[in-house]
Length: 359
Image (spheres, rainbow, N blue to C red):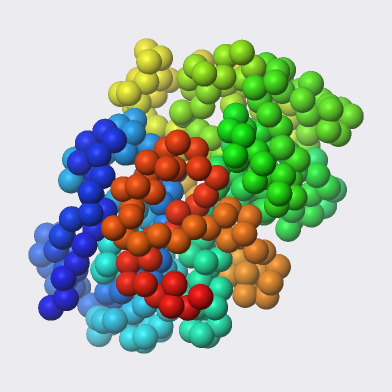
């Protein structure tokens, strides 16, 4: 039996690659299952959701194997799996390890039509497991369409994915706001209008400088609960500041997509209300402007097939947009540190060296 390694959360700020159990065809209670498949992981990405856990800002327990973005190769399948074969390359939500068991494989796994074609675009296709559908969901749920003016809060990977999605949906202009120089420069380099939130605490003024009006048709919150203030307050956490600013700049009747993570409890927050998952929102403003709010976890399977086709047919160069950066599994702890410092990169782990070999 092969050995297995995983990226393990040990406590706030502590991540380590450790030996973990090799997956078995059984559920957590030990009951044998025949609807699953074991994958050899080809790529698995570091996500902002993982980073929230590593910062100690969630209730994640010590010992948790991190990760939920996987592209892998089927190396074993149960007898009840009908539509997949050993050797197929697939996309799924999973973990940062060498090998993983995926239950209900026929439902959960998106098979790529041609393995060689997929490996040639693996840096793009690895984004299908979460980040790209999440950004796309934010743009779609905000109502982005042909000619839309769009503001995206946050120039991290999900924000960039939302911006790329808005562009493919037909937006006339896409602006991305952030506090990080490196991320703002990258956003501009890949074709979006950067908004430096340190320059003013009035987001409408900054938007007006770009499109000659202080309002947009649609907006996306790709930041979530660890948001910081604008202008002179940019060094302080302000958990509801993004939502409040989006209600201010989104036109009456407009939509606000919220793929950014919010939690039921934030024990690490300095804000007493936020520790209990409560936010100081100007909800009355959103009500008065008849805004549409869309929250919750992204239904990845709703979008991943069509996004796969957009990638395979050169419509969506998402790896370039999010600056996909490939590192080994052993380099994951350093990747978390660099990502935490605001690196303008999407870290992709390459446990078996298959991405580098494909390149």
